[in-house]
Length: 530
Image (cartoon, rainbow, N blue to C red; front, side, top):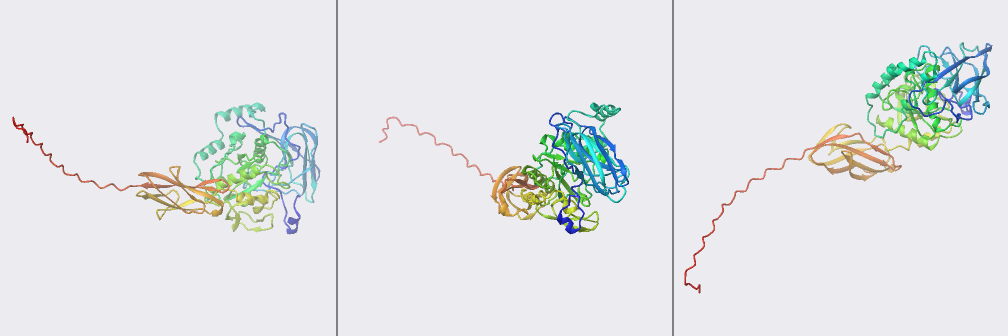
């Protein structure tokens, strides 16, 4: 176990980041045609090859070092998801480029029930991202209890860009791939229908996200469709790391995401990849669990607290090194957007109801059904007994919390009359808007009054009121805040109907009759006029 002295002192059993943590065990992905390379041109079908572990005794089993077909991710699984493995589970792989074997890496078992109670679910370890490998070895032992039945080594090939299931040509697979193209899988249809119904507007901009289609998700694996939070509201965001410590290029990120997707579904037996979103060291965000980027999708990421939260997992192991500034910025953008959809301050606190009785990494006890206070941006270890998101990323969460735009920005009154976001007010023309934000005034540079998306007035960052005069008609009114860090948030709109009073009729002025001109006096002949 890779626990710390603190955990030992607290008497807490530690595990690494769950679910689907990928602990790297290789010098990096193959740079010359690895099946783990990124860049997709459509759905990419990944494969899982399984090798049975050979029993050495009741408490020991292994897969001897051997040649394999190329793979990018590996893990160990067993038949009964609720069974526990005592002792160590260790694995290593052989780099396909150099032929060198990696050091042994200890794999931590995943918590059973992360994606609910599912028929056919298997017990499994965290997977290990190895880049590109063509050899593997596993050993299990050191415990005092008999090992569970059905131990297998799972080798995942996440597939290559442009190579679909039909190209792999396993018997019958080509026909299934062609059929999938002509008739979308039920899961894909359900996801498309869900995505068609938009989620709530957010006060923060929606960040750019690599969609499932873009990273090559094989939607034929997802035939159940998404689940949504029962309350329909996201109250917190949990930050994870995938613990993939081998160097990787950002062009490999899509393959890592595909590998996790295949492992979570085909090995763990989950409905989909566990995380809601993932981000790589270059700050690129990836859509995780299907159901719509703007929807409150239920993931399988933080045992006991999935039902009121969302998640972002950082690709990489951040036990001994922090996440990159780009990755932190990616988390902050997603946190601001998702929490901003539900009027939640990313630098605030919230109350979550525990879905399981357990302890977190710090030794705090939770009882199922009881409420507990969390930071709205929390680490996985805050809710579960794990080192995740890593000893060096965890303290960086404070930077993330304070790096967002102005939070909970809203219009509260128009011309002194209370109005709710999305509400309607009227005015004869003059407009005075009262607004508020939960962000300290010292962190805000300015506020702008937007009328029909155009700025018409600007006030300082410590202001709470702004005024203008509207022309007659119906207008969409918002407040836009610019934080000192340059980030922008925009309040949900209110509708203001400007009804200018009708001008009184001007009475007609009677016309004065014209005076006829006097006739000319004829000149008298011989009269000199003197």
